[in-house]
Image 1 (cartoon, one colour):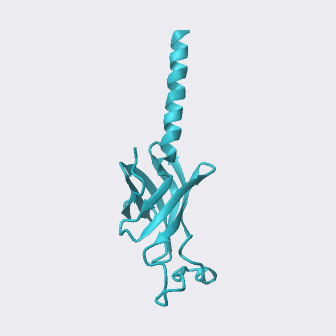
Image 2 (tube, one colour):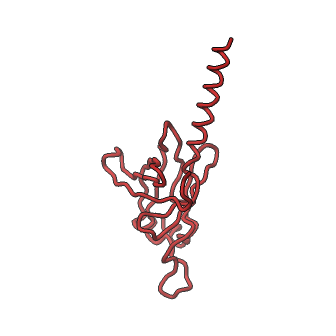
Image 3 (cartoon, rainbow, N blue to C red):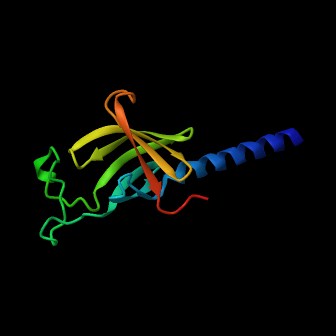
Length: 146
C-alpha cells in the first residue's frame, strides 16, 4: 500500500512539474535586435505570441502606425504591426514547444516553428519542411526567470 501511495504521489508531482514547465513560455519577450516586445500567452493548451511594442512603431510622419505591408494577402496589408499575432499554435511536448507557425512581417512569410527555453532565453526556430533548413532567433525574457 505504501508503495502505491508513493507511486501515486510521484506521478502527481511529475504531472504538476510538467504542467508548470509548459507555461514557462508565457510572458513578455524582447526580440534579439531589441526592436520589439512580444507577449506569449496560452489558449486551450496552445501558445500564441503578439507584438505588443516596437521601438520604431510609426511611419516617417510620426503619426501613422507601421502596417503589415509585406503580407501576401493584400487585404491584410493595412493592419497595424502593433498587436499583430506572429506566433500561432505552439504545443508543449517534453520540454519544447512544437507544431506552430511564426510570421515574419518584414518579409510577409510564414514558417513552421518550434521553441525551447534556456535560462531567460527563448530560442525560436523558423523553418520550411525540416528544421535544418531554417534559422533561429533568441528572445530574452523581460522579466527574469526564477
